[in-house]
Image 1: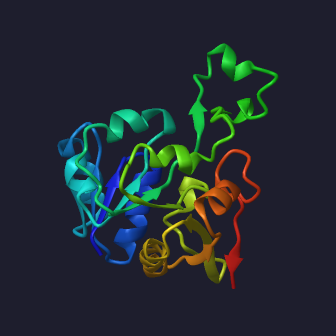
Image 2 (image 1 turned 90 degrees about the horizontal axis):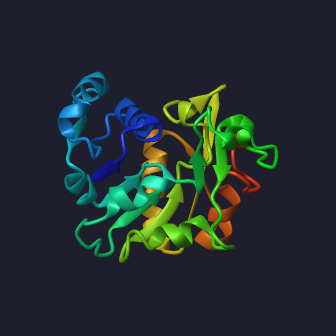
Image 3 (image 1 turned 90 degrees about the vertical axis):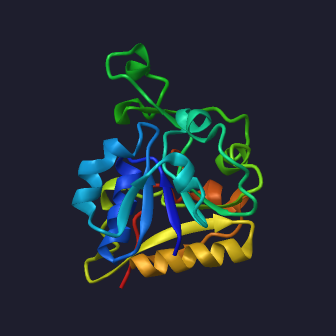
Length: 214
């Protein structure tokens, strides 16, 4: 499996850990350059290598694991996607400075969690996300769980459920193979508009839900 990961924060690094634990290969990248990932890839082992964002984006399957507000900067200027599979691991939230007025906003039900919802004007996040990766086949996955459990697909004697959604059946089948290989129990939620909205943070009905297949 030819997998690239754009973003090396908690999401990207923990998916890389999950892949490495099964001996699966991936190219991990950050806009700070591959040299900044030396310690992390040394920890992850020989199947995970550091690369440039362009190198990660050239993979057959590419996970986007950056903050919503960084999408334009992270994905701008990349070559055409030409039908490659892009996994949308993002959520439309902004992270708050704990010392800012927004962090104490009584009208924000998410202020206690250090985030606020981004108004997308009634559109689904994957609909907006797809505009950043024109020509890609988008599948939403890896976005509904606490990032700290992503490297633990097996738990309590069972498999952690991983929701995924997309409009292209063949692309979803390839992503399901990745989820199976890692050890998750994949659950197909349907289309991006319906299933993607169910799983996206902060207000999707299935967001932050943890199910275990025993």
